[in-house]
Length: 472
Ligand code: GLN
Image (cartoon, rainbow, N blue to C red; front, side, top):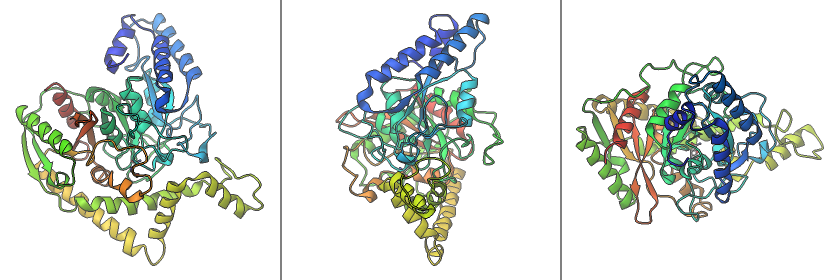
C-alpha cells in the first residue's frame, strides 16, 4: 500500500488484516502497472509467492510469531545475487547469470520474513549516475518521465517513490543510493563502510562499495540496518554490529556543520534554499548549525575517479568469457575468447573505466596518479576527522541540481561525473550518510538534504533523521 511503512505493514499481517500473499500480489501488480518507468529488470514472482504462502502457513500455525519483516515485499538492485531470477548487474556480460548462492544481506532480510519480489534496474555494473548506462534501457523519473531518476540505484529509488514496495536495496560506491533517493524524493541511507556485508554483491570498487537502503522513512532504514548488520565470515571487512542502531528518541542538542564548499554559486538556488530551510529546522529543534570548511573536499571527485576506476579494472578482470557470464561465439582461440567476450559484454562506460583504471595503475603512472590520489584520500579522511572534533554531523546538498533530462549528460562523461561531486567525499572516507527529502524546486522536482556522520554513528544519524521527519 502506497505510503505505508514497514512496521505498519507487519502490524496488519500480525493482526490478520493482511496476508503475505496479498502483500506480494499487490506489490507485483503495482510494479506491472508502473512498467513504463522501466524500474525493473525482472520479477521473482514464482519464488516470491511460494515464500509468501510459507509465511502465511507458519503464521496460521503460530499466530503472532513472525519475523520483524514478515510478509514485507521488497526490490533488490540487480547487482545483488539472489534466487528466483537472473542476476545481471544490468550488463550484457551477466544477462542470463543464475546466482549459485544469495547475498548475505538478502539472506538476513529473508530470515526475518521479507520477500524479494523483483530485481531493479541500474547503470551496468553500477557505473553511472542516471541509469542511462543500463544495458536494459534507462529508468524514468517518477516525478517527470523526461528526466533521469539518478543512479546507479535508479530502479530501486523509482520503485519506492512510485509506492510499489516499502523499501528497496541499493549499493552506494560514490553516491548510488543517495543521489537517486534525492532525485526521486525518498530516504536513501549509506551505512558506514563495513557495517553491512558485501558478500554476494557484484563488486565495483571494493574499498568504497556499501549496501544501502531506499525507503519512505528513516525509521525503516534504521530497522533494516538493524536486521542486516553484523559480522559475516564471508566478508572480512564486516564490523561488529554496534549496540545503538535503533531509535531511542530525544537527542541532546547537536552541533551540525553546514559544508561551505557545497553551497557555492554553482549550486541551483532552489537546492541552496532547501538546505538553508533544513538548517533552520535543525535550529528550531534546538540544534546548533554553523558553517564549516573542509579544504580537501573539492578534491574528492578527482580522487574518486582515479581510485575507483583502478579498483574497477581489477574487479572486472574476472569476466573472461570462460568461467561464467557472456562468452563470445565463434572465437577462434583462447585469446580471442577473452578479447571478444569483453569487447561485446562490456558497454562504453565500463570500458572507459577499465581503461582509466589500467592506465593509473600502470608502471610509470602509478606514482603520479594512483598513489597521489591515495595520499589526498588520507588528507580528506583527516579533514573529516578534524571536522568531527567540532561537529556531531555535517549537512549539505546531495547534488548541485535536481534531476536532469534524459540524454543531457550522456555525450559528456565529465559532466556526468560532476553529478557526484557532493556524494563521493563520504564514500572515500567510509562515512555513513543519509539523503532526506527536503522539498522541491519550482518544477516540482524533489531535493535531497545530505547528513554525514563520523564512522559508526549510524544509529545516532538515523535517530536525528527520524526526529527531523516529525518536524515541519
Ligand atoms: N555515480 C558514481 C559513479 O558513476 C557512483 C556510482 C555508485 O555509487 N555505484 O561511479
